[in-house]
Image 1 (cartoon, rainbow, N blue to C red):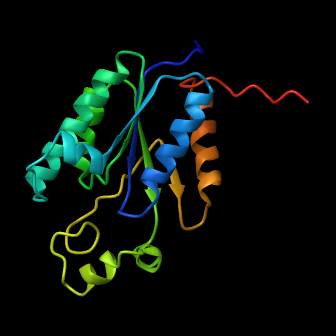
Image 2 (cartoon, rainbow, N blue to C red):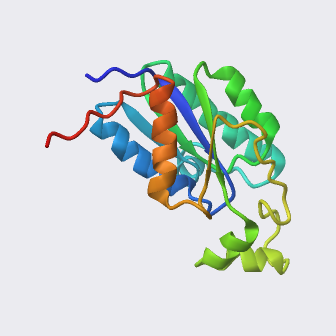
Image 3 (cartoon, one colour):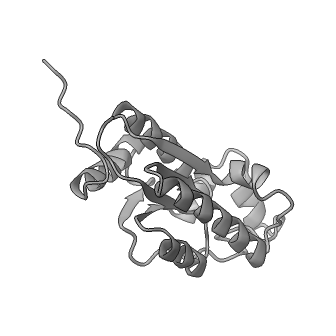
Length: 184
């Protein structure tokens, strides 16, 4: 078993900013390095752990606390818990941070203009036109982290560049083993 410690890697960012893509890429890389890892995707958790919750601030906060609780349990048992949920409110993210011993906030930044441009479902256009209520970043607030441990930008970096930023930080801080160079 490769040496690593349990932690919570908490992706936050607007819908379409790359949280799920990066979390899956990171999961694959960490598994290759022998790490125990579990991804808690916002949509999957909402379906399985938070069924019945709506999108009011109270329901969103409850959903995020549930994700945080499961992530805490996993991390204290040596698992790297990766979360990919918008988690729009700073206060509840800070509550989760306080409950988890090794919490690493990863902000996937991207402008509304770029998210609207790349949105294949047209959700941003509908939200901007007022057709979708409570849409995070448009008609509902998104409070960007002020001091995330890691910040990536899916508008200016391709997914591999963002992944390398995350991996380098985690290696430097001793959360994951440094990848052994490939034999030539």
